[in-house]
Image 1 (cartoon, rainbow, N blue to C red):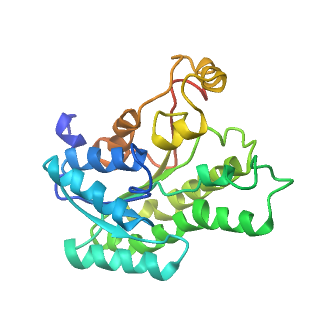
Image 2 (image 1 turned 180 degrees about the horizontal axis):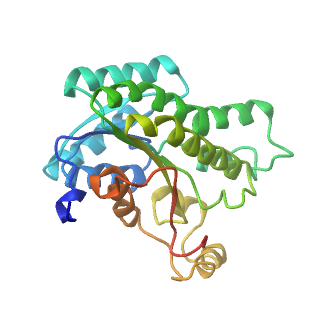
Length: 265
């Protein structure tokens, strides 16, 4: 079949985006707005239920279809309840974007996130959100995807995993392993599983970690071939590709969207 730009459309698709309402100007919010613009019904999911509802309302004001759902991805029962609500209301699930993660929180209270000084309590908590939570979300939605003839799962990893040099990087590298493993396991069911690895962005979270106008920001931007940070919206094209028929032959891959920070053959 000849290529058509219509292959990027997501009409009649139902998409869950976790981590969509926790912070202003977030990547999760940009993902929700972008998927809705492509035609998907979007579920903005977050531990912050009010924030998730706010993002859903932004999608609605832009002409899209969306609801907000409160979910705690560290709790299997909460994840299952989210999946059931979406299936009951919209008939099924086609797309899962595992965007929820702890990042800014990993610098608060304990200082730099080093493997040598992190408490076991925090180590287990961070892994439970950044790795196990994504796996549990996938488990909850896959039966519906199989029943609908396939689907797409996109995990949010990080350029900071290549190579991992922090505890945060360790969690994201582990999520790469979840991505490639699920791609092999779910491929026979026509479910594509990929990851996006952003670089430093101008999101609320990104700017709180690497403040604009500082030497740290200049150093980060100097390591990219494009010599700048990226806006959350600049990740949406990659997400749309991986979730749409245009990307139907892509699975088990990490797509670096980072201005040329991590360059891999």
